[in-house]
Amino acid sequence: MTGKQRAAKTIELLKSEYPDVKCALTYVKPHELLIATRLSAQCTDKRVNLVTPALFERFPTVEAFADAEVSEIEEYIKSCGLYHTKANDISLMCKDLRDRFGGTVPDTIEELVTLPGVGRKTANLIVGDLYGKPALVCDTHVIRLTNLIGLCDSKDAVKVERQLANLVPPEEGLNLCHRLVWHGRLVCIARRPQCDKCCLKDVCKNMKNK
Image (cartoon, rainbow, N blue to C red; front, top):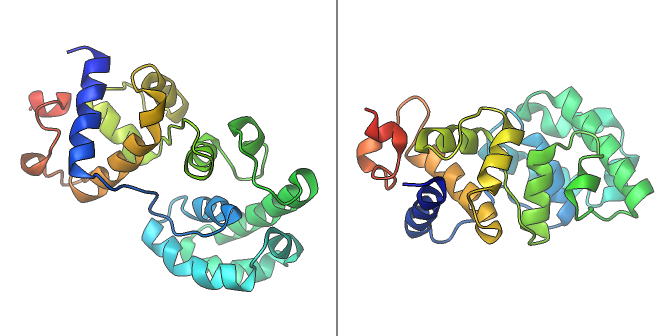
């Protein structure tokens, strides 16, 4: 089985298992997804979704975040961990959005990664989920599962993104990543994978090596 064949089969099987897939973070406005994604670093999406309703009610616009005291932002996000750094990034990010981009979230990876606290993973999520552009969101679940399946052979997010880009049709990338995240949470759990229940067991290299 070639890499492209393995990728195509993986996409097919995950589509069948998770037909209606979307980003697990809850948001309404474009900047809210940007902020929620920053909060999700080393924190669960579930925890972020518990925190953001009050945060976004208190600071309803990019301008409100840009004008806020960092210490007040911190009060709303303490339970997300690393809250000093995250609050500072959110403040600087929103100042940049206001001053450099007219309050609008950019639609290119190149512009997004110039914002404080925004790396390629976040930038890909934004261009994919908000703007419908081809995207590969390589978080820890995606990196781990693509290595197990045999689609990639690196733990480096940028390398994994490049390897997947060579195997996955552009229009399938974003939803494949979303499905891998769900599969990593529900079935291919890092410390206790449920291989007997896995829809990918016939295509997974790790399963065949057991």
